Image (cartoon, rainbow over all chains, first blue to last red; front, side, top):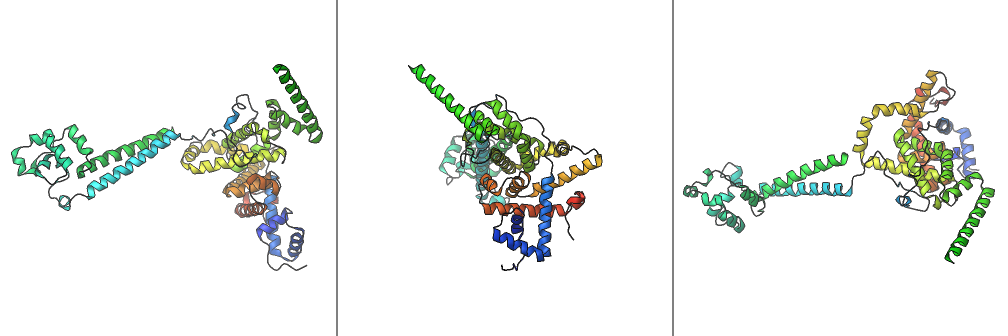
Length: 227
Length: 232
């Protein structure tokens, strides 16, 4: 029989311990162990580890697991997955609350709303002309009041603004000093502006609203799930 | 007419059952009889099997999960699932191995579910940390025959070390080691339980033992003298 030159691996020694090697491998291993201190040491440690595991006393039973009539009812809850013998858990464990599909869907919707809101917000902010960022005309708000002065503005904004009460209340001097006009919004105007995605202000407001709804919704639903 | 047929069918079924009972009694004895009665829906018969195997199942699940309460829940669910699916037990493997297969599957599912939602588990662990530690120590062992309190404490510490070592193993290696070295299943039974090949089982057991050996080396001082690993 050829002598084993290399050391045996832990896998081989572990299998040797359990008698899981072929007869030829088993004999080869025994032969090798006679002259190899390192493999003998590894084998001894593996044997000690197994002995420790087998020396463990069984844990004390916390209670009896006898089945009651209630527990044996409703057999449909068990489903088999891979083969006829394999059982997957039929009942959710008491200590792990499984979130419902409705809760998950609402939470996902909240995240989606927040993302869309953020998109609108960024879209509104970064499409603002640089002059407004450098302290020039505050173009972020007066779309309603100054829309009538800007024929090039989007038709929807103009039409909304032209019909709004604020536009009608604008003083004649506003044509020459629109920046000085106080921003006066009725709730209806604010609502209309918020949903007018054709304007920068509309996108910003829509973004803020969606972002707020998304964030609040996410935290509320998360807390709901945990409770 | 219909009633006669139903009565005859019932009679035939009764005869078949009695024949099955007689055969199983002669072939495999008492346990097989209990299994057959359980397959007929007799809860009392199944409960006798529960009494016979609850220590085995709970022991395996506890060593896999390391948590008193969770092991208790998983064990109960294992017996419920086993009762509901006992019709599918064909006797190809031992009933003990079949139960351990269900138990290890459920324990693994629980482990994966907990690690998929670690926040929920962490909350629970923090809330119950102290109580859990105490219950773990008291659960770790039946300490018959050890009257010396120091010995009892040493034994509990020693078991705690091994349990911690088991918890450090990857799940597949832990299952293989627990089923092989603690429950005494054969490699073939472990392969059937874990849906793995014999080579994979061999490798998992070896790697698990190797890791555990390294872990125990670092905690030599807590091991009883006769179990200390010789590192010289």
